[in-house]
Length: 385
Image 1 (cartoon, rainbow, N blue to C red):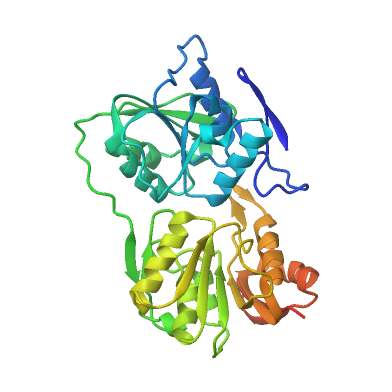
Image 2: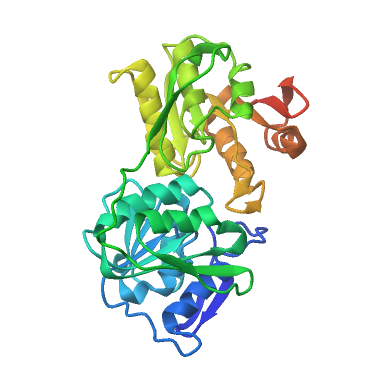
């Protein structure tokens, strides 16, 4: 936990879940720059926050916590960001009811007076968010985006201009930059292109030639990534009434493949992204029908799965948290999988060879075998003894 100092006071903030060894703060220079802009910097007038304030993409709740006195609405695709926000509000003595938390799938407020956008890593997610919010923006809406310089590109600015209105940027401060956008109510907008559908290639097991549905912001939303392709070619061949979890499911193609290969199995799709779980359900339904049985959970890994209830976990863990490289998510997933698995249950993991997941799996499970590998990827298997 670290302390963010602003003109409104100091705030104790942490990411979620909070790891004692986690070196990363719950905010960065882009958040600080935006807060200073709202307060009025270099003689500028402070922004009037008395109307409906929307905070989009607040990564760990820092912006929402500092602005809690203005009763903001937070919109995020991240379950973990919501949990971080609630935890940070609590540790700073704020009533969580002062903040309204919405997911990226929820309907936004009908009127927006101040729109604050933390620019996401995914340009597609930004595009979809702006399309959803544009109808509630009016001529007097203050629209400010923020991000690190490496996160803001010409394509980022063009999206704001195409969907909201004329756009300009600030000078860079501590490698952060602001985006100022003037809403144009007369702007003609094309509909959002999301969700996106495509057909899978042949030669990848049970899902060969099948349809995938991707909402905005999902990893490799327009094509099958090579790591998942490798995994699909080496999934375990099983039969019977297995309980299978597609952990970090993304668009659900791995869990859907397992369900197609073993119709007696029950698959649970889990991700911390609301749009990922929506994609997984759409992919599953497109290929197995509306009556097929499966569970779709937005949550913190395996936290909501009963201990000892699962036969097989399939996992392609992320190794980035926004712009930072970290194995914290993978470690959490591995420990959660071990708890959820029954005795003899298996965790199958695909990952880049250089990440060295075999070391963590041996530490967690006491065993790890290599199922398949190529110069870039490896599929690993760990068994709960």
